[in-house]
Image 1 (cartoon, each protein chain N blue to C red):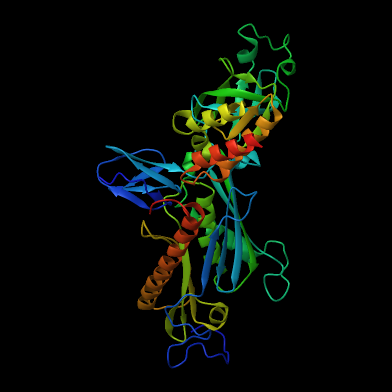
Image 2 (spheres, one colour):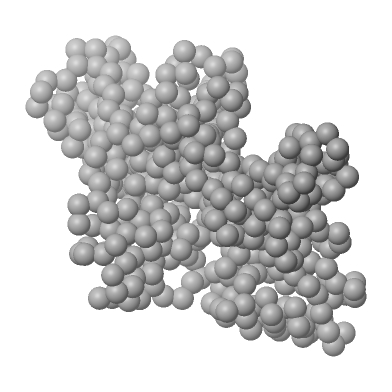
Length: 245
Length: 226
């Protein structure tokens, strides 16, 4: 079911994928906390060929005023792809897809951030995709959570995110662009590793109940790998050249 | 219990057991979880995290340095480097017999003026109320403003004011530290002023270094010889 016809061999006999990875192997991931001087918090992530920069501002005054909430702070997320982030120029105006991803990322971050501590304020998250490859929403979510922690927004846990999918009838971790185009299913998962709670779950494609379960488990495993790197990014920025630990 | 200071990030489990969660921690089941990047402090019955980042959140009785942004006929609004604006009622400056038509607010404080103030009242339902009716409070007439990260203010003050005293005695400057991360330095001697400002910036940039006090002292002394 699903998937486009292509001549690309997605999975060979030895279980090696089109970019040389094993089925349970994520792409190369690099996360760096900080980097933007004028933002309250920021992060940069390279997730395979994705390159994403996130800036967090706030808590700050809400404009327009009518958006503010007297009970709690509000979270605003903008996911934006640069015109040069894809091979053919993308119109910089927010597309339907970008609006959806902004909403999805916002809702995936909300269970983690404790905005009730800052009533009548807003926290703004700006996500700029400098270079896009498959799975940019997962990479963006992981980076956004690091940037929020960097900004000192109280959080119950970091949100790590990674996709899983079905390619050539096999459940694989971290679907790349080719596999996303030609594969059978793609499932981005957002996960709070310490609280063991899922905050984002989408599915594009068709899976049987067993496959669905396995796919979620694979995705969560990927999130745990991402979480370790998020932890490292924050530790490197804040606790490097400190005495103990 | 393990009393050692630990470095934590949001979501890290600090400890389990019957502890009272204080600053920047939450209780989830019987686990105590950090909500900030910071350093843990475990006491006999409570746990807290000293955060290393974040904006200034007003607390009652904090001394802050604010900048007048505007005024109405009854009050001024102060920018206090926070997500909330400070509210300074005119009675506080003019006294009880303040009258909205007789007194002109701009005669005392104009937009752009710096004010040392104390947070008189603040809760989540309204903006912080500040007062300048106290000794050492009020309009700041002279001095240089240095902005540092609010989370590094305790480091600048040091243990029982040790760090700030060291800087003041070495340079002869008078330093007013606002809990909101704004610091006013005034000094007769321009060299002392420069040195004090440099020392404050040094604390801000290297707050995490273990023997910071020694390094600051070294910097203060080395310059005074030349």
